[in-house]
Amino acid sequence: MGKALIIGAGGVASVVIHKCCQNPDIFEEICIASRTVEKCEAIKAKLDGGKTRIQTAQVDADNTEMLIELINKFKPDIVINVALPYQDLTIMDACLATGVHYLDTANYEPPEIPKFEYKWQWAYRERFEKAGIMALLGSGFDPGVTSVFCAYAQKHYFDEIHYIDIVDANAGDHGYPFATNFNPEINIREITAPGSYWENGGWVETEPLELKKVYDLPEIGQKDIYLLHHEEIESLAVNIKGIKRIRFWMTFSEKYLTHLRVLENVGMTSIEPIEFEGKKIIPLQFLKAVLPDPASLGPRTKGKTNIGCIIQGVKDGKPRTYYVYNVCVHEECYAEVGSQAISYTTGVPAMIGAMMMLKGLWMKPGVFNVEEFDPDPFMEALNKYGLPWKEDFSPTLLD
Ligand code: NDP
Image 1 (spheres, rainbow, N blue to C red):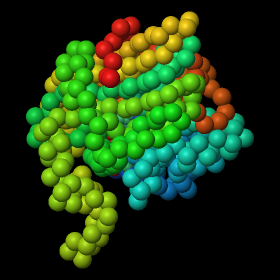
Image 2: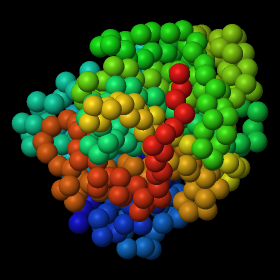
Image 3: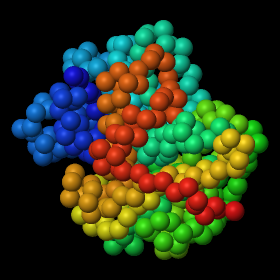
């Protein structure tokens, strides 16, 4: 059916590529392109010989001209961006120049400002519409599946949704004293930034990790959860009519937070360049270089993740509560695609989003977030391609 250019060859990209190769009728041909071509070739070596034809290429995705050249050469139907958020705009520019559809899993963040917002990518709406091409933003798990969960709840169970609490729990253990489950730079920037949530039409800002609760998660048990700013809050606040409050919570162990505090206190999480042996370096990028590569955590990580949405609202004039979540087992992900559950839960929805677009089920010119489309085929695909979900109609609430 189609050709996909996949940019990035890290933990998430590896899952996307495995999943595309499991669906060769949709993904007949793929090109894996990244900064370090050896990583692309290593993934190709694992998967070559199946029905999906695989090529590789070296590309600097910060360079729009180089991207345009690659797109013109490979002629994909869609570009799946699973590099870093810093490359979103250059890749969108290249898609505009070549008339090719675009998909990503994380919204743009300027390298020098640790604040991700949709405003940069939403500003491309008119240009994508005029070019007759589509951009699907945030088709990972959170954002991505969590946003589709909300659209599904809105479609099937509520007349109006008033409160959403997104809870992202990882009870996996990789055996290292400290490591991040996805790109350390992106992960640490997210956690050390001020928290925020949406309430009554505006943002409420908190100190980093200021708000904490304890929640008993299905199949995982009682965990400390902390309020973070997260990108799907921004788009859900626009797309879920009548919403009064949206919050995002993530689990962190005491051990993880102690390491993080020490690293912060000694300046290792800073993104301000410093002089080191006659050269400018960014402490957080140096820290990334000494931490374990998230892609290497796969064989070591044991346990489960649980990510879902606790939703409150009204149906037929009566209050209603609903919890929809997915539980993923790290070891099972590793057995299937050679990655831990964090990469898996992001890579599978990226493949599904691309599948929705290539099948024409989600296809219209412009720039969209996933909750703007019919959630039903996506929810069905989650059950089919490795991320089955469960529902609870009387969940414990956070407050
Ligand atoms: P990794 O760091 O493992 O991989 C990133 C890849 O992008 C690497 O192969 C890297 O190349 C490549 N890359 C970086 N810069 C460039 C560039 N300028 N040109 C070409 N390639 C480049 O990250 P992850 O796989 O963990 O994460 C991928 C994306 O997924 C991130 O944007 C992250 O924010 C997002 N994500 C989304 C989630 C969600 O649920 N929505 C959850 C988790 C992650 P090299 O190997 O040379 O460094």
